[in-house]
Length: 180
Image (tube, rainbow, N blue to C red; front, side, top):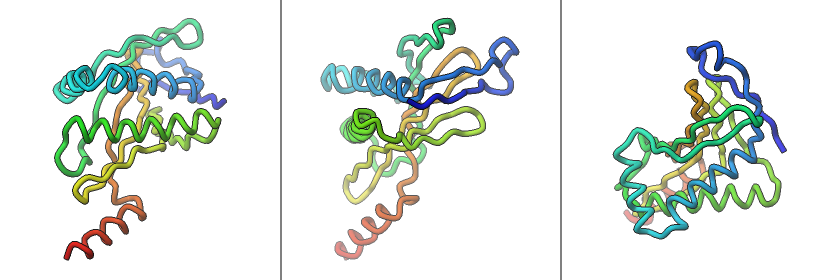
């Protein structure tokens, strides 16, 4: 299992500047269980309500997590859809989320590489995306784990630009040329 040292934001109070040591696969597994439980396992009616709340809020509360047996972190869920292409609704969101969760779940079950990237601010992008196509538009959903200075761990569902993937660019171009 991979351990990663996480630093809270530079503007955090000194008491919170202490580094956290997280087991990334365990945190990712917890995140996936929370996301699956909230948006998929309880059925579409519940998932749609939660999706609506997520779209209308900055973030949703998702419980707490204890790190190292001593530090309790609030868990929140947020959505970054700035790079989403096309019409955004629950069916497209759910399909992307399911694809991402399956991709991550398969990797966790095989004890494979989560291919995560960390930023200077301590954010961890799990690069096991959910890729979907609807009406010729591709969308790529990833999970970004964002430790916050206020004893919060945000699970940010983030759409990233599909054009950065050569295979998706080529598929989109091929579809355009066959449609013309």
